[in-house]
Structure formats: structure tokens, C-alpha cells
Length: 204
Image (cartoon, rainbow, N blue to C red; front, side):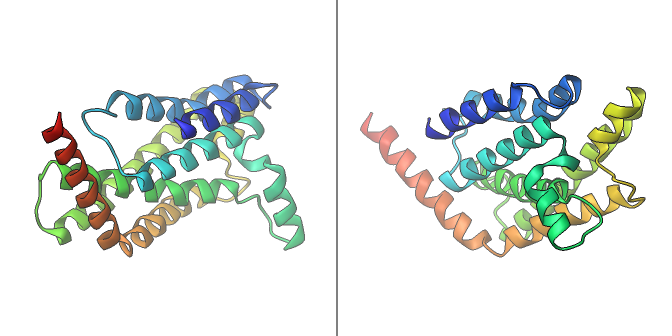
């Protein structure tokens, strides 16, 4: 509930005079869909606090990027100018988180439903799904060429970088692989959550 209230505040701010309303709709839609799914599955497929925290972080990044456009977030413009970089890298942070979240969700779904018992296969499949999500998102960005050129440029956030799509997927892969370093801790958290859920079900 705390995360929902906080995101509601960020979402309301994001919707006030965004840079481009159509761009705002495109960018914030995945966050709204993701939150709606979290609410829908809260009873039948609850997640650990770790996963809900990263859901909130990802949704917040999308809302901020939707308001300014990913290539013009002020804080990252300041970082760009301070370190004499040639681009605003807020979108790269978003894609890094885009690699983290699918791994967390996949791990929880596979382990809770006992789809696969081997931790190695759970890790492998979670990274594969994270990369699939990143690739699908790049295809969605590519399809933006059907819309106006200004909206397309802001939505893609390429900033003149020819290998933007490939680097986006690389950042997602880095986020996914980094998450695997904490896979054992995540599995312990999932097991604890499952025990608590089972004990609660027995009491009721």
C-alpha cells in the first residue's frame, strides 16, 4: 500500500504538463499495466518485498522518463555536463532495471509454483526471459517510427547513437546477471514467504 501511494504521487506529478502527452502515454503505459498485474495477482501470486520494491523503482523510472522524456531528465543532463559525456544516460539506468525485474519475477514464479527444481535452470531461464523482455521492448521502440518524428525520436532516446538498441539489451543483460549474484538470498526470502503463507492458510 505504501508503494501504491508513493507511485500515485509520482504518477500525478508525471501527468502534469509532460513534455509530450502522446509520448507520456507510451512511456507510462507499461508501468500502469505492471502495477495492475501486481494488484490482480496479489492474493494468488504474492511476491517478496524485494520484488515489489523493484517493481516500484521500475515504475517510478518510467513515470519520470515519461514526464521529461528519457533523453532530457534534468539530473542526468547535469551528470552529462559534469563529466563531459555525449548523452543523457537515464534510459540506460532504465534498461539496467529492465534486466533486474524480470529475473526477480521469473525466479519467484518458477520457485513458488515448483515449475523447475534445479536452481541452475531457474537462473538460466530467468536470464533468458529478461533478455526476451528487453528484445521485445526494442521491437516496440522500433515500431514507433509509425508515429510522428519528434515523438519517435524522444521515445527511442537514441541521441544519435547508432548502436542504442544493442547497448540497451547489454545493460538489461548486465542487470539480469548482477541479480543472479543474489539468487540464493532471493530463494531464501521466497522460501520464508511461502512458509509464512502456508502457516497463515493453516490458521484460517
